[in-house]
Image (cartoon, rainbow, N blue to C red; front, side, top):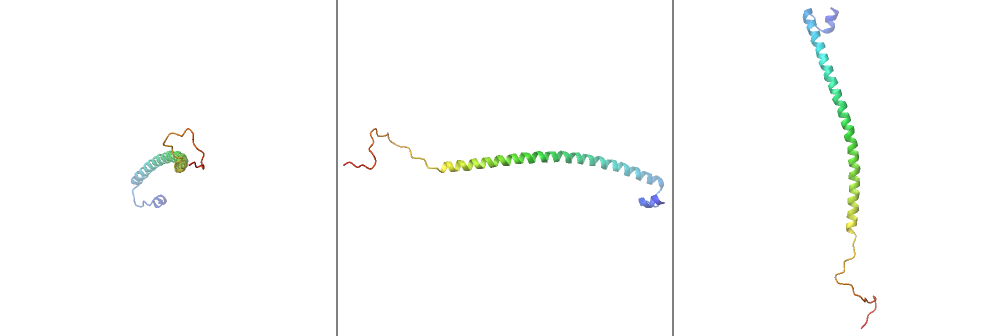
Length: 101
């Protein structure tokens, strides 16, 4: 009586109770196996997350380096260089500021 009250199976024949208990034990075994599989997958995914986080940090550092390099190249590109001379240089140039008439 106490056992049937605890399981909520009042009025159910004993053979059927045993069948239900057997089915429940089998179901518990299936659920425990699924739980182990899910835990194994969780551990695998946790390792993958850790690996990807490290790779992400490495790539973020590389992006920072490349952005600094791009900025430096932009600054270098804006520097004005002296123009190239178009003619041949004069073999006897005059001093600047002297005007001869």
